[in-house]
Image (cartoon, rainbow, N blue to C red; front, side):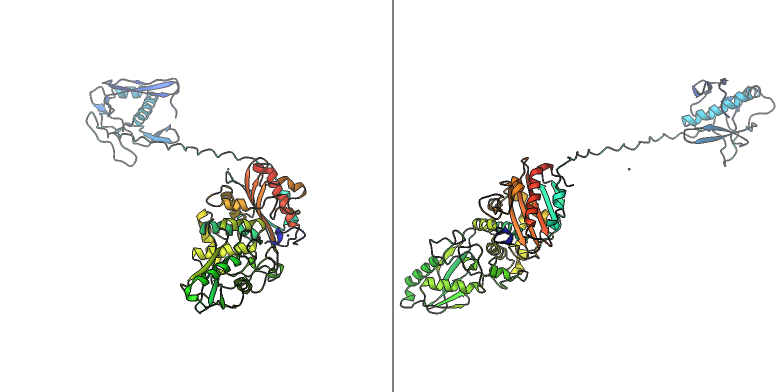
Length: 576
């Protein structure tokens, strides 16, 4: 049992065209007309062929318009760019020069209009994608050609598909503004190095977090972890069995411990601290009857008793435990064979333990056999005939007995049996694998968990508050067999258990009486509390609170106060 779980009296924690002129040019075949708007004036060109622009002269010769003499240029602004087109000051075409006729007359009489028209023609040809036959910068002189030049075919423009407009992502859901703060309570000096987390058990939303992902010493809150692993590996109905078998020598019997640390030496009918425990006198009676009924034993009395505790291997004491816990009555040596958790007083929760629990059990059994036998320690022969057996309470009952008063003995028993059944081993060192493997079916990340024992007494154990809140979500939902744990939790203000004591949830904190179902914990380096809260607004919360470091007994009251704060805030609990 945790020291912190005792009553106060039992324990001490983001050039432009003219605006007023129009140049009209006649052409032999008015097959097409191109109109170029330029402010208020329009220049019209009639083109004989859609692919080639040619102009008839008076003598029926065709006069080509020379282009590429870069003496004069006309600048035509375009959208985003400027196109520079060269215009010849002097006609350098292959047409006759003796007489100026036709288009030449027009040019002579209206030079300005000609320039406007030429510019418009170029503009029109560019705009429609036609290419005018003539010289280009860096190209050869225009040829003296026939009446019509074949223009280079205009490539079909490739449509440019504009990039798709980005589609806005889904709007982020509005985050609820929570206003109920416990920041002041979390800063209470009595909590020393404070860690904690609170989760809405229905939505899985973390409402409050202070170092919640750091694995730290849990004290007896670890018993919840051990119980969860035992339920996974052993199941709620598993019972530990103690047997008696025939020895290898005449007159010899062997008492074989099967890991039931609750087996009682009190006579049947007398209730020990572990209610419903198996009794040694029942086992002795079975063994005596079976011995006497075996013809092979006719005339051979029982004379030797061998004690077999090999189901668990040593060491019997974890090196992280203070040896004083033995004398104070909080922890026995861990052996597969012992009675009453090796208490001096089988009826009391806290009672001094001995230095040799196996010997104590052997002495009690020898007496139950009627005496007259020598007692030694050894192992049973393989395949030996069984003379009798008794069983412990089922795991479901053992878990309740362990959690309600924080009994260390049962927690160590469950941890060792879980490790053995999982195949990890039968000593303290095997618990890391055995217990963690047992937690795997719950689907919660076990990274960082350190298991040194089953009770939480070792300061080297480490489990994060975040793991505990996640596990309690499953316990609250009674997933699998985890409802067994819920049913075994102490209740604030309840009739019994480690939260029923007068120094827990007292005064203003009693507002949470009946609404906090949690496992207490205390070791010399910290006080802890973890479980389930039925908040004032009806929200089920899971929580874990660790007060670690240089703490004293008043840390319990500071823990109760912040827990009552969680109760009052409910789903309005702020992380600020």
